[in-house]
Image (cartoon, rainbow, N blue to C red; front, side):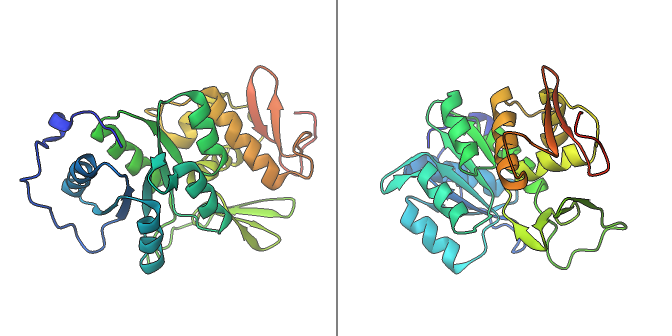
Length: 262
């Protein structure tokens, strides 16, 4: 993983001691084969209150996932024993919903689109600033369900359509009572649409609602997430019933009690 020189982050070398985060702090799994930058990034994230498990290859990543709960994975694209895209796809195929931030090689649209298609929650082009990586981590973690034992919300909001129900407080989508695998980005986009029924949302508006005003994303990334959601939800993704396109304007959620001509 190649990041920009982290002078602004206050990191200058290996002499700084590792900081101990609280035991209940989120645990980040940092997967990168560049030893120096892996250690510098781990130290920086620890200064921000996270626990970090830095590993150099996919085999070590899998061992970490087997032995303990991980809150988020920062996954480099190119690794000695495989590529991050395949690893992310395999995790999703195995039902592992741990959020993944993919570090792409060049930041080209094709890298980002492929990453989203295989289930990554976010992407960041290299070289990157550690502070931007931190902001992305915080944004993804904010979209995760509250921890078990947390105080219940005053209202458990549930949106139902067809055989689906989306629990907005737990961020769980169910189909006929069975949980469906969603990335945090897909949940955020779906929730934004369901919270604004019959309202056409432009791509910019949809991204702002889903990920915040400071998030930069291409139109294609929204299209990719909508495509994935339609494959999961719609009987015929090419002729969607609920997640419809309004030509030249954006997307709209059409609830069950509305017509199909949105």
